[in-house]
Image 1 (cartoon, rainbow, N blue to C red):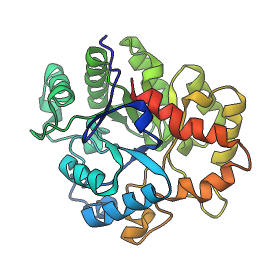
Image 2 (image 1 turned 135 degrees about the vertical axis):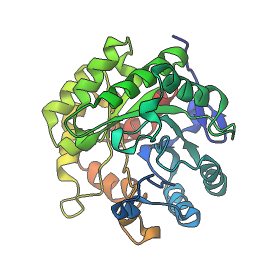
Image 3 (image 1 turned 90 degrees about the vertical axis):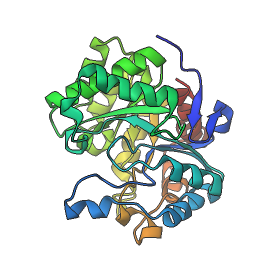
Length: 306
């Protein structure tokens, strides 16, 4: 396997020292490619509003956002470039495939080699002729199942990783199928330390999170800010226990706020500031500031360096 050994943003490569406070799983510009009206709530297509949210993140010390919108979910990498430049943030974009519901209409018609080549070409040459390269690749699985087409996406993404070394970040629907994702990746010789399993906190199961960490994978708590009434108490307790268990270097925190109701600029709450303000205050009652910085700064720099 080639060594990645770089951090690729929409505006070029940066050093790990430039990463700073990082959100490992967010959406800034999204247009789900389905006609159902319910996806209007998930459509973030106002660049001015998304820029304002990103500027708010930066004003509270945030430096890097990993934007996890993949193929066929409304990627706009030139828009991300403009947001990054306007706000002084680093934005890392992604290649790869979502769960089957959001896969392109052509997905099933492509051969395994073609599915691999599409992502491989984006990693090396850039997305949609823009020259903007992703810094991470993605696949997704469905709630409590991995479909046949999702199996193919896993294989394609794993092959790209093995060829290039680029890290993998996954969609675990409602936190499920993390173990099964790792099983399949390991069968293809992908090492768990290069895999970030996202939405794991949604399962609300400490033992499950612990087992994933024990296998060497990184995990993302990225549904914080959804339970404001109890100050994300369960997630804070789970993070505290995982730190005590010795897995702090595998933990990441983000908001996955790819929905209008989560972002003040679109009329929602708590916004991208939440992790850097309210959640930080509550976390620091249970963990040290050194622990917080390890999760928010050091871990991301190490993982996305590959």
